[in-house]
Length: 245
Image 1: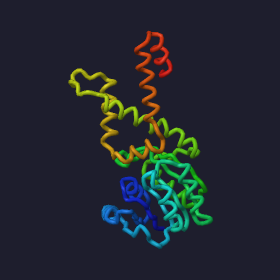
Image 2 (image 1 turned 180 degrees about the horizontal axis):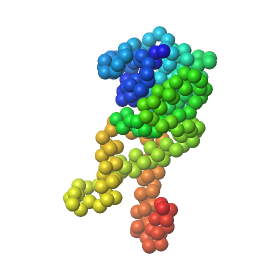
Image 3 (image 1 turned 135 degrees about the vertical axis):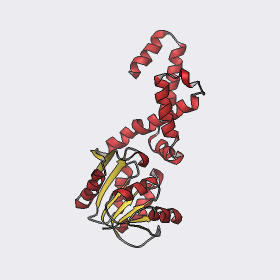
Image 4 (image 1 turned 45 degrees about the vertical axis):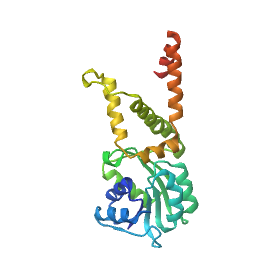
């Protein structure tokens, strides 16, 4: 069975390398689709508006483009349509609305960047079956741990796990000055490593996460609370410290 991977970026390429099946890449940038196909065994590139059908359609586009990509490609799915976009509720609803009758549906969220694979993958079945089970098997065979989670629980959790976490790390990176390495404390070194990891990624990915899950306003409010407490008496700061513990 052939898998249509919609999106030839890093996540789409990882999906293509993980599934044990022939792959066709479709991307709004035809050259990127060709490059991904050339770099992947048993793969080809197809036009983004292809009229062909595929056993599985796997949508691996940025979160902001998920709905449009699902609407455009759901009809091409013969057995299953799945997404790897990083958000679950909206893609599952879009797949249910646009997918052909009887086609299986699932949402997968790799909780890691492709460069750090394998790892944990959150998964929710909208309407599972043998084809989705086969996809699950391929992901597990590649060393990943699949974590079952309701879509709403996943999306709520990502507000903290991704949105606020990334905002806090980026805020530290923006606020930090250059300091002598010999003076670095363990906490500073750990935060610096995290900042290097986040800023070594793709800006658009982190922008999508902030747009989908927020985080910056909550981190800013927390920083304001710390500043106000620090300007007050020791009891005020102790209360903030206790709440953070």
